Amino acid sequence: TGDFDVTKLRYHKIIIMTDADVDGSHIRTLILTFFFRYMREVIDRGHLFIAQPPLFKVTQGKKDTYLKDEAEKSRFLLNRIAESVEITPQGGLAIRGEALMTMLQRMDEYRNHARKVQMQGVPRAAVDALLANGFSDRTALADVDRMNALVAALTAAGFEHVRQMTDEVTETPMIQFSVGGNGTGKRAVINNELLSSYEFRQAAKSYEQLSAFGLAPYTAKHGDEVKTYRNIDDLLDDVFKIAEKGLSIQRYKGLGEMNPDQLWDTTMNPETRRLLKVTVEDGVAADSIFTILMGDQVDPRREFIQDNALNVKNLDI
Image (tube, rainbow, N blue to C red; front, side, top):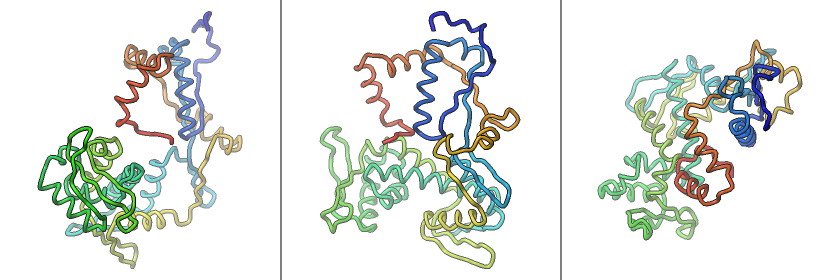
């Protein structure tokens, strides 16, 4: 790359195309690093693009629809039932159409973030109790009334040995309780670290937006059928079942799972493809981060990871 000359580019578009999953995004990052370090002018002159291969193919009869990711699939499915399903939150008005679609999206987002919080050792019922009692961030740990209310709510939810403690390391209030096992199960903690984590903050944001529409129990009407739901998970499961009726949904694990015609139509055909142009808004900041993460100095990288661990959005473990 020492004799690289941007004026000798054979084509005006260089397109990075990787699988539409986490592994693909890792590979894409490495390729972007290469261009940023050794062929920066390709980026600065607007020649570098990222292909957007679909993660799903939805077939209805003879019609195929390609969807970029999970979020786009959810929007597509919810759009199908927005006018045929009516949902009424407790003490609220019936919701349908565009408003219903937005409310169901907030439910789906909350459920997805709450599942990731659960991977940190805090059961879903505890996450629900946290947010229902105003624990949207770590400041609530210093509120005695809220802490007492949360202890009562966790106990009512069936958790055992719920007690308030002080974190020995941070010297801040926390709550510890047992999960399952008739009191001999795993211990879970609610502390500063949990309430500061990216996934919990996102769950709290979705919960707040959902609260604006109304909370459980919900009454759903579809045709002549009326059903009441005590939680959003059961409601969403039934709604997606209705939306998926008559459809065949295929998930692509990689580009190699598509035949040449599909790959051309979805990802390569200039008439139908979607491309993202790569730009560098702040070259100095980008250069600094690349040096920290891709350089051969271990200490700065360790420091960066420790400082930003709570802000991770997509961790592949």
